[in-house]
Length: 343
Image 1 (cartoon, rainbow, N blue to C red):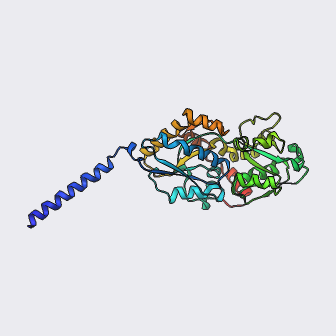
Image 2: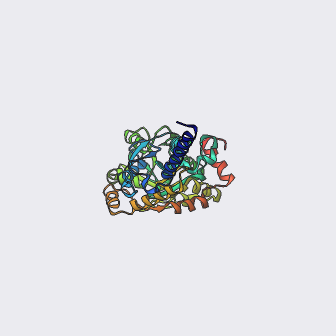
Image 3: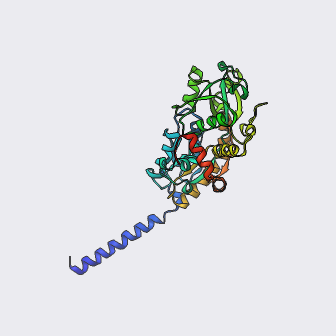
């Protein structure tokens, strides 16, 4: 081959490669998910409330995304859910094939313990939520506790995941603000193991999402094995005579602290993607998410599984996070003190 013909051949090959590359980049975003799998990361063990909602979403999400990708749930417990979010932000692909539950500590740990996280929460993108996740304080009948006032007279063991988790922070704040006497036992990696421990008598009480309690342990409520003593978040609990804890806190500063700890419940079963995911993939995932949670089949299956639904869009959650997701320095310092860390 002559030098001229070789140069011409090389040029043609370069043009062909450029056209091929441009064709790939011009691929419609709607075709991206064809024959793909979406990994759905859940920061608890299997059997907990977040797991139940994630398995529900797994069964229907792919049907509402162009290309009908498969969806697999991966439980990744640890550090109150932070492990799964660190992984999403730093190790998972940034192409829209990895999503995760926004675990409650997503809204707390980045401010109180910034060295424990490897992400900036402001950079994430919410896809939407299936439901809010208002939590309640429950006690096993063997404890002989009937009211919040009883908790001020008797030491009661309470199961939680870790001192850094909101499952511990809320009862610690109750001890300070209301004079309760919780002895907090940590190390449980989700609601499932905690409820088993309570049934076995290892602990006498815990905090649990109302939706999870009503879905997985309605028989315990019906049979009087469990008693609901208080609502831990903003919503009124549909049990006669059960107060919201925030309404029992007289001090304004302590109530502001309580409200920050309660904020994650408003986001509930929110799902998000990491910074760096292309905008067109975020749009597809958001549209697919909302189409899923509004579909008749999904709603019917949620009812069959006794899982409450109260969806919000990713755009609504993003606006809510921008408005309320940055606590004051005073609140950060107080929550960090309860967690036993230095912000």
